[in-house]
Image 1 (cartoon, helix red, strand yellow):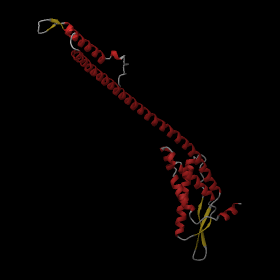
Image 2 (spheres, one colour):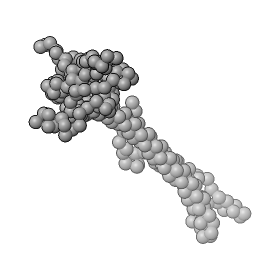
Image 3 (cartoon, helix red, strand yellow):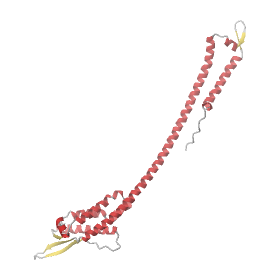
Image 4 (cartoon, one colour):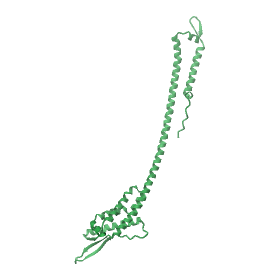
Length: 277
């Protein structure tokens, strides 16, 4: 974790500025010492101090002398300025790096929060889907009982060589569950019954047996509608609820129910409607 940034003081407290002041003082001291110490003698042997010689010098010589000192100080403070700017840029770069680290940490926290939120949202969706699934399975059990109440029963008629025929009951949709049977077990029993019904009809169809009896397919179409609605909920379900659908054989119930409804064994709707009236 990066250290907290120390607040910066006034510019005259910065090390580059203080260094420039010290060197400037040294340069001025050296210049003052040079002007005050020693003498300058002319060709006639007359000697005066350097300061007096400077004061009586021509303007161009005075300008050259001052330009030397000024140039030295200007170069010094140019270095000080570059030094201050370099320090400022380094601190800005460090600040940007700290900001980048903070943003990366914030991004990690936000990503973790997003994952937690998505998990919670997924859990809520799965809970809602499970409650709806329970309602649909109860509804499906009711639809199965409705099909049972319709007393659908088929007979396969096989005529013998002497002109008589044998009557063979093919199927009657009755499950006779125990009182303590759960809705899931009831649906599983219905799946087995529909599979058995389809297998028998398909087997006798191969022998070109004539069928009599039957009933309306409307209750079974309603049953198929509920099964389809249950299966559309599958992507929203949790893994254990998906396994639940597998355990009660919902896919096979849907497949064999649809296949049975496509067989030519059902009474026309107008006939079955008048029979039920």
